[in-house]
Structure formats: structure tokens, C-alpha cells
Length: 209
Image (tube, rainbow, N blue to C red; front, side, top):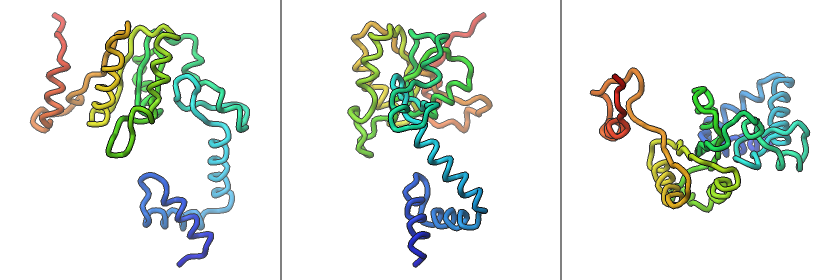
């Protein structure tokens, strides 16, 4: 229907998560209307991120190398792992790199992270072997980890991943905790669903006098 170059662009945009055929078409024609310098800046940003950004060799968070090249990014560590001020005995396990950003924004955590790069989801064909669980187990003894915090989304996939890791770690000399979940600040009880309210009750804590 469209010129081959335009159709190829639409097809590639349609491969992006959350971008359907109509959205891909709108984005493609938006790019065609952009000034050359704007479109080239976008292309340069994509090339740069592919050349310089990879996974941290220790925690599998996003890591950027100062030297572009096919070999440099694979051997680098992220800024958090390189920070000697971090508590090496405290490890927060999350699903995705974006979760690291969310926890860091709180300013309450000073340990290190381990990114599984997903969660167990049989429907999507994601099992334990597709996650960075083997690497997590190797870090516990090697780095002297004393406590592991499971920081997963409060959904079926997050619960399944937490349950699986709990079974793996129960016999190891490490404290295992999971972040509390429940009512958001400013929320009303009458609008809370049963699962959210139930978890809020389970995660209750003593009120200091």
C-alpha cells in the first residue's frame, strides 16, 4: 500500500511493545514530517544506546560503557554496583531495571540490586530458566549477602516468582523478606478491593506508643 521504505518503517515500529498497526502508522508519518535534524537525532540516540548500553555483569541492571564497541559494554558494571558506599549484605531483587529506578527514588534503600529481567509467567512461556535466578544464587555466598528483599509487582506473576524464590532460598543462611503491599496513601477503604485490603491487614505493624 505504501512505498516500501515507509512500509518497512511501519512494520518495525509495529514490533515495539504497546504499538499497534494504527499507532505504528501515525508514528511513521510523524517521523516523515520531522525536520531531518530531528529524525537523525532520534536515529543517533538509538545507535548510541545500542553501542554503549548493556546489562551489568553483576546485577543485570542497565549499565553504560564510556567506550562504545561490541566488547566494552558486556564487561561493565552499573553505577550502583561500582558504588563502594552501598551495603553489600543487603540485596533487593526486582523484576526489571525500571523497578530499580522506582526504589531509588524513595531514597530509603542503600544496598545493592539483582534484576531478574522478568517474572515467572507460564502463559507467556517464561519459566525460572529464562530469568537471572542462577546468577542470584551465585551472588549470595560470593558477596556475603545477609538479607534478600523480594520487591516484585503485587500480581500473579510477582507472587509466583516470590514463591519460587522462597522455596529455593529457605535453607540458605540468609534473611528473606518481601515488601509490604496494601492501601495507597490517600486511598479510601470503601474503594479497596478484597485482595488489596487483605494484604494491608497481613502487613500490619505495631503502632508505637
